[in-house]
Image (cartoon, rainbow, N blue to C red; front, top):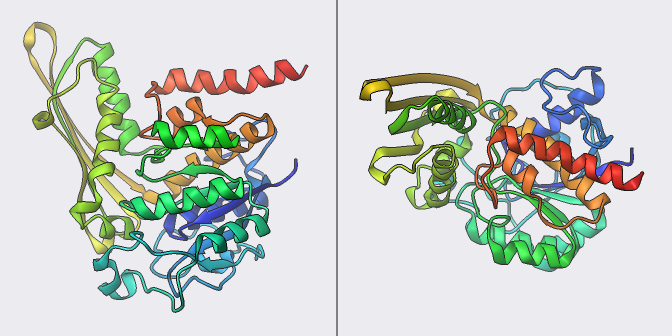
Length: 366
């Protein structure tokens, strides 16, 4: 297969896990841990990273294969021999991509590289020079202005997007229309984890519903020690994140809960947890005869590899859409891999739609 050329925006833990994973599956003949081995012929090893964009001094100017291991990244290293890929990390534009408290957090926070911010012309030129086909957005939660800036750059450069964060682009009708008019696909918004708090919360909420149990109250409280959790100490950056996670669960319930009966979102930054994320979940409901039922669950996962599995699939579905001239928000991939897609669809139905999407083009070609 021809390579899938990918640029990464934000070289944090998620980028590290994604790049490590591509190298791991290129070097090892295994399908262990993959949601899909091949998507329309594309394997994880077909993904090539051609450009990195960041603002941290410890990453800017380095090859992407080196930058992914630089502080403050603290995710698990499961592939320590990532080959140099020739993709340099360039300095981007800060805007609201860096919260103020992250610049005074020492080694655990962000250290802004010297020099001027990149202009729109700089970013567009870099994307075009790299021949990137897809831009993956891993900016910190709350980066509204920065995300919109880079979406403008992607549209001008003619690059598709996988939007992994809770800034609403694919699910915003105006932005979605612009990608459709430009002939570019987009998958988004806010990537789910492979087996994470939201997907499990949705599955259990759906189980309660299908078994005739009325869900009355629920919470999902998460702790972690990566830069994502540190960034979210600023409550003003959390609005879209809480909306994204809450709506993903509400969509799986038979009846929408009042705001006071549902609490979902980050709870606490615990530095020594590093990239480990711990979720505490509770669901309360009424079953046969109005008798109460309560469920509590604790989930512990390495946060960034958990997301990378879904991002790798989303990239390949995005490339498949490019190959077939599809544009705008990709409904099935967005619903299956993202918390806040344009249309909320149950996982089983979305997975069937993914299979039908690929089959439809294959049959048309025949």
